[in-house]
Image (tube, rainbow, N blue to C red; front, side, top):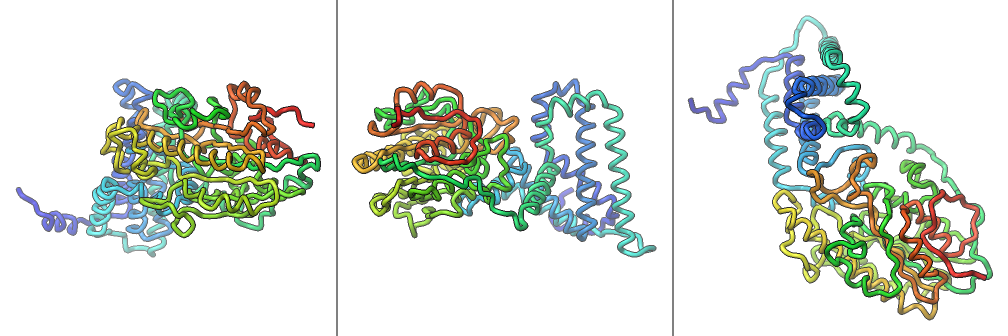
Length: 549
């Protein structure tokens, strides 16, 4: 029998259902349609045919927990609103988990909230819209078509309390039965497969959102500014002016860096520079910009870094800026922002054509160099400049470079990576690194023009890496505890002129050692010969210096 949309609608308009039953069914629908990534990762850890019953028990627990979440939201909002919110959150989170391998933890939420509109638009796609329509909007419409039958023999608030209490009781019973029958498996699951919990949807996302808001609430009050240095100065014996440009890169992974031995020479111009020192064994502080950038300028090191308090804690950029004896600092940004590092210092936004004169499809990193010589000429002190790149930010890699730099073809021409082959995605990504290589060569050229007035140096380091489809994972932002090396191993390069205090030969020997972002703050302070009472973490320095008087 043929059913058109009107007949289907009429069927649902005749349905009468209790809030209790509707919540259980909605929760079951969400559990079944929004946890495909969890099932996929479960199958990578277990032989499914030998653990079907255990998988059913796990899915039952997820169903029960989702029911608890909906019940709690229902206690605060009208039922249809509660179901609509949970449905849309679940569908959105499931899309990014299924298509990019992304998990929604606290840091992913933080990174998402700090992403600008242009970056966010790269993540919008027809597939996302279709998924929202089919698994979000359509169910919401159907839920609004049914008649919700609530018992009339008690007050509305009391009916809601009874429904919520009943749902909680059923959920606790389902969880207890499932864990009781498979207690041995659950004991192993909890201890040995902790990473699987990050793929439980929407529980993980809602838990992370609550944890993030809790952290913001704790630090939103009158948190005092924490000063770490009370006495920092450039020694009188330092008669040579320093000009240091630090380039904070974006989303470049170490194993696609030409200087690290990648099969493609993605760094052809840097390869020709005589005074470049390459560091092949550098680990990032995080897997997202929101963590790695403030962390690399902090003195605490990754293990002790607290992103919630970092914006009100003195960092290396602050200490350099207030050094007695004089030091000019400037932050130019073609990314989202400085992530709190430069909020107390001179900051210039190069994401729009208002400041950046080199904009086409988007504003180019090279535009941050325009007018920089004029700034240098106006300073009478040592100078420290940070240039924060857009770099290789995905998934729209094709936007990150001018067409003249499309060396590797065919390159993916869409942010919808599922429409491109792995080869096309990698080609587009590698082209972004070739453009970064060009940008760094232009920074070095600028520094070479100033070697008569300054001891000049450039430090380049990427904030984090990027997954390119390995094990079905794309982009970045996985929890550090199980993030792959592709997201945590990053390139670092130092260029210096021969007249500087850096001993290039000795530094190159040092560069082969394992190191991390933890070394950057200490290295910056040492590079400017700053005498300071600030306490450093125990990371090794990145540089060796000539014998200083």
